[in-house]
Amino acid sequence: MLVMLDNSNPLEIPELLRRISLYVTTNDATACARVCKAWSDHFISAIWHIIDFDAPGVNRATKSLAKHGHHIRVVKNIHKLDHFLALITSNPSNLRQLSVVLTESRVEYAYFIDLLRRVNTSLEHIEIYTFEEKDAVPYFAVDNMFPATRTGMTSRLSTIIIQYLNMTKDALSSLLQNCPLLNDLDIRDTTLLPWPIHDGSTARSYKHTGVTRLVASVEQVFEMNQRIENASSLLVHFPNLKTWQTWVSKSSGPDNFSVKLIRDDVARCCPLMEDVFMESSTPLAISILTQAFDGLTSVRILHSDFSAEMAMAILNHQETLRAVATSLDESNEFDGLHYDLESGLSSSTDSQRDTIELIAQSIPRHCARLEKLECPLAEMDMVNIEMTEWKCHSLGELYIRIRGLDTKVKIDRAIHLWKDGRIAMRKKQVSAGHKESFSATLQLDNIIPPDDNSIEAHVARHLLKFKKLRKVWLGWRVHEVM
Image (cartoon, rainbow, N blue to C red):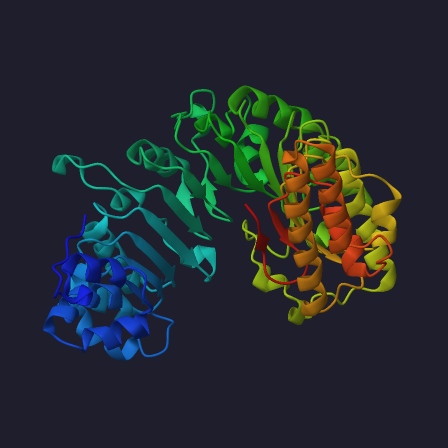
């Protein structure tokens, strides 16, 4: 609790300054640090909290890192030898998050390993990428990611992203055993050297109960299972896996992978699997999405993969689905800025738009338990929406476009009508007498008159059908109500 004397300036209270420093931008923190020595002590940590080597001016400031390394918590986009040298010199003893892009340089790789050894006791999130030919990249020595056993400390890593590298499966098993707090593992396009053939039936099968999300292709997870009799797939490591972001290469087909085997492995190894992000739309991928899972509650696909076949695969889980989403890329989070009215993403032909709309409409019409529909590039026609009832009465989040609702002014009016209508309906629900209830009904009619046939009014009336709707995006800005 802050105690302030009557004549004190609140901006002289150390606790308050410290709290303010947590929310200011880097530019504002720099300005505040120049006010006086007392302010500098509080705001200097905000200035050096995040270092992004791709940000303008950062490379010129690397000489100052040596003095402020203990303030650094997040480092992004290390991709030059100078970056490694500057960071090692700064001795960042409290680093929490690290993002590195490796090249084929052996010297650079050696400095990267040195940096890992210095910060592995504090790291919580690490991202390691390479864009060189895989044959030129050394096998990644995962032992450097966690503290040495003799130190008596354990790894704090909860998120690990290792993409486009080479790694042995023994190394993967070692990584899992030494990162007890791991929750999120991404090994996209990382080559995994197989276990020895003679070890096929008893290959290391350490079970990490903390990992709930995995990003890996079907080939990465099941290739050894197909080649070696009784060999385990990677799923054996993750008994509590809930989310699997995966894909199938265009060269893989039914002859390469048995959907039944995949289904059996999912059921046996990952009984809690409920959320799948399928990044490909090959016949094999659609078969896997349709047949390899039971009771999915969430399905995400790429917008470019929207098709009637994919819709049927999704609707195969209509009895349990609570969330359906499409993404522009492999990003797993909705970002309205990527789909804004001014982004120019609605360039599909009329026939493509009609096809996408029909597919998107089928989901809320059939999935009664649906709570979230995220199809930001699906432009729907209100005439078609009003033609058939949406069964998802528990809908809580909606991210779609409406044909004709194509300006920020129109979107804002539709949202305001929806919000005002919710207030009127809430009053109607709490009304005790018939007179008050009739008054609330009149109030709703005043907000959206029955003879108002504007697109905004039609949209608002549709939104008001869903009493649990809390978040809405119709082309720009996510609107939220309590």
